[in-house]
Amino acid sequence: MKKIDIFDTTLRDGEQAPGATMNAKEKITLAKQLEKLNVDIIEAGFPIASPGDFDAVKTIAENIKGRTIAALARATSKDIETAARALEKAEKPRIHTFIATSPVHMKYKLRMEPEVVLERARQAVRLAKKYVDDVEFSAEDAGRSDLEFLYKVYAAAIEEGATVLNVPDTVGYKLPDEFGRFIKSIKQNTKGIEKAKISVHCHNDLGLAVANSIAAIQNGAEQVECTVNGVGERAGNAAMEELVMILKTRTDILGDYFTDINSKQFYNTSKMVETFTGFYIPKNKAIIGINAFKHESGIHQDGVLKERSTYEILKPEDIGVFGDNIVLGKHSGRHAFKVKVEEMGYNLEDSEIENLYKKFLKLADNLKEVKEQDIRAIIDGERTLV
Ligand code: KIV
Ligand code: ZN
Image (cartoon, rainbow, N blue to C red; front, side):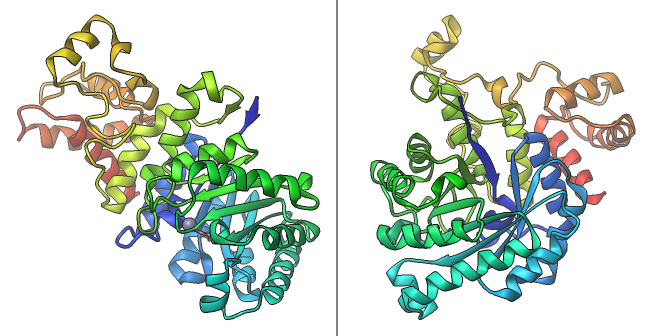
């Protein structure tokens, strides 16, 4: 069985989506939730981008232990030194440095010749290694880069000690079969590749980010970069919940691979990201949309009542969606409230429950029935205020 590392970039690439900005308290709250979800790597931000980003990475590095905390840096000394400072207190720090390698990016954006880009990549990894052991190198727009050039750039990064080589399909251009072969070629032709892990980072411009990530896994990628709800630049990044549930569901084909993700935390995490970013989840979104487990047509309802697997290939409880068995209103006691909150996947201290219960009672006074979404709003609102 091969473990696939889940690298969450909701706090970095996700937050880069126009309008998805999160405040400092929301970022640390989400980082704690990502810890519960059990992601392997949290990319906490891009410290050079702003003082707020720097502080968020620093706070997350100081408070979240037992996970790798990554910070993004362009291939410049100022970026790398700033990322290193933000990560100083991290238990497991990773500097993630990148430079573009596609002809279009090198010519128009960087205005650099390929040899210069190659040298900059080498220097960036060398400098990052002075601060941390774990250095990830990304060839931005790898998906549209020349393979022969990529072999050279990745080999140089490995020579300087890069531990992870990331292959971003930055503009979501590749097709699954093609991307699978692309990853295989990098694995077969890059000198020293056995010393590093291959990672992929797929964008969703053509709706193929998850399919491309799966194809990459089948061809040797050991780390996948993704975001909760697929939030991210333009059409977003590969959606973590889709990727993980595909691996869990299609074990007949993908049984060689597993992740350590606690999928029962998906629904909560998804709702938190929806609240914090203001990016509403479409009703029919795979895995976490509210219609994902609803059946309206008579034929489907009849089938599901007889046997769930007729129209359901996933169990709602596997992603943390539970039946609405306990109906809450103003007569509900603390115990029922606590059970409900736990049923919804939250694991809170008694003092937090007590505080939330008082808020719940105030709300219940004005409503016939308090729905799950109301309870979630109380809890998530409270969490951002701590
Ligand atoms: O999409 C991209 O290429 C990126 C890199 C910085 C990894 O986000
Ligand atoms: Zn990206």
